[in-house]
Length: 503
Ligand code: NDP
Image (cartoon, rainbow, N blue to C red; front, top):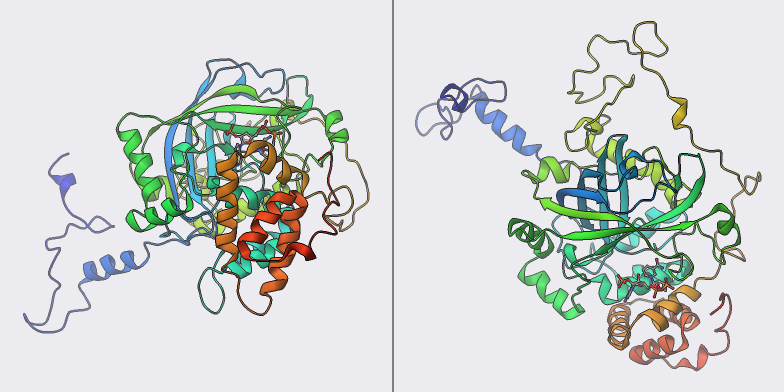
C-alpha cells in the first residue's frame, strides 16, 4: 500500500488531519457546526443497522464447496449435476428462527439451513431448515404463526400461552412440534445437524421429463444435541456458542461436511401417495422413497466480513436453475413471493448486485435504476427488449415441461378437509419407530416443562385441546404428558382414534 492510499479520509476522499478532537470555539467552548467530519462519522454510525430479518435474524455463515459424487443425470439436466466430480462454490447460512439478532444460539427453535450454490446456470438457493416438515401448510397462516413465537404484545416477553394456544388450534403443526420439543430442537452446534430442503421441488432431465424431489443434507459430524438443561446453561455461558463453534472449527481446519441426498417420486406415484406429497407437514417415508446419494458439501472458509457476506446475504426458494423446478407445495408457492419481497425491503431492489448475492456468471437483462444501483446500470446498452442493437435473447431450450393440473376449479379449499386431515400418523411414527427411550423421555419432559408456562383464563382449554392431539398421535405419549401436567385423563379416552392412515 502506498503512503498516499494509507491516508485516513472522509467517504468522499478528503484527507483528515485530526480524528479525535472536534473543532470548537476555544478549548472549553461549544463545537462548530462546520466540522463536517464529526457529522459524517456520527451520521454513518447512526445508519449502521439495516432492518433485521423478521424471521431467521440470528445467523452464522460460511463459504465452501459442493462436489457431485454420484450421477443423477437421469433425473436432472442441471449443469451442476452434469458430471460426477463437478464442483461449485457455496454459501451456507444457519440461523435460529424466532429470536432477534442478539438472541442466544441455543434457544429451542428450528434451525435455518440456507444454501446458495453459485452455478454456471445461475445461483441456486435451497432455503431449508434442520427439520423435514413445518408448522403450517398454507402461507396465509405464516404471519400469525410467527407472531406466536415472538413477543406478547403487552408483556413484550415470549409466551408459552400464545404458542400452545396456536398449536392446539392448528393440529397440522403437531409433527413439527414433536421435533421441536425433542432434543433436535436444541442442536449442539450448526455442524451437528441435518439440513432439509423440506419442500417438494421438481427435477427435469434432458428429455424434458419431470419427477418430484426432496433434498436432504446429512451431517457427517453426527447428530449431537443439547439437553434442555445444557442448552439453558449455554445461553448464559456463551450466547454465540454456535457461531463461535463454526468459526473455530473451520479455523482449526476441521471442515464440516454434509452428504447431499435426494428422494424421488414420479408424477404417477405422487397421485397415489397415501398423503398429499406437496404437504409441508408430511415426510416421504425412506422405505418407500429411499435416499439417493448426490454429493458432498464442505464448509472451508469463514467470510472475511460478517456484515458484507452473511448479514447481506439473501436466499430465496424462487432462485432455481435449469433442471430444477417448483411444485404445487402451497408453502413453497407462498415463499416464492415472500422471500424476494423481504430482501427488497431489507436490502433494496438491487439486492442481487451485492457481491455475496451476485451471480458470478453471465447476468443479462433490462432491469435498470433503483436505489443503490452500483454495477454500472448496463452502461449505454439498450434498456428495452426487443431491440435492434444487441443479440440478447430468450433461449427456448430451457423451457420446462408442462405440468398437468388435477383441477380447474379455483376456490379456497379447506387445508384440513378429509384426505388432508391426518395430522397424527406421521408424528406417531416418529414417537414409536424413530425415537429411542431417552428421546421419548426428554420429549415428554420438554413438552411438560413448556406447557407448564401456559397461564390465564384459557389455560385448561388450551391444555386439554393440545393433549387430545398428543393422544391421537400416540396414547402413551398423551398419557405421559397428561401425567406430567397433573391432568386427569378420563376426559380424553373416548375420541382418540380418528384420522390416521395405516397407523
Ligand atoms: P426412517 O426410520 O427411515 O427415518 C427416520 C428419520 O428420522 C431419519 O432421517 C433420522 O435422521 C430421523 N430421526 C432420527 N431421530 C430423530 C428424532 N429424534 N427427531 C427427528 N428425526 C429423527 O423413518 P421414515 O422415513 O419412515 O420416517 C419416520 C419418521 O421419521 C417420520 O414421521 C418423521 O417424523 C421422521 N423423519 C423422517 C424423515 C424422512 O424424510 N423420511 C426425515 C427426518 C425425520 P438421522 O438418520 O439423521 O438420524
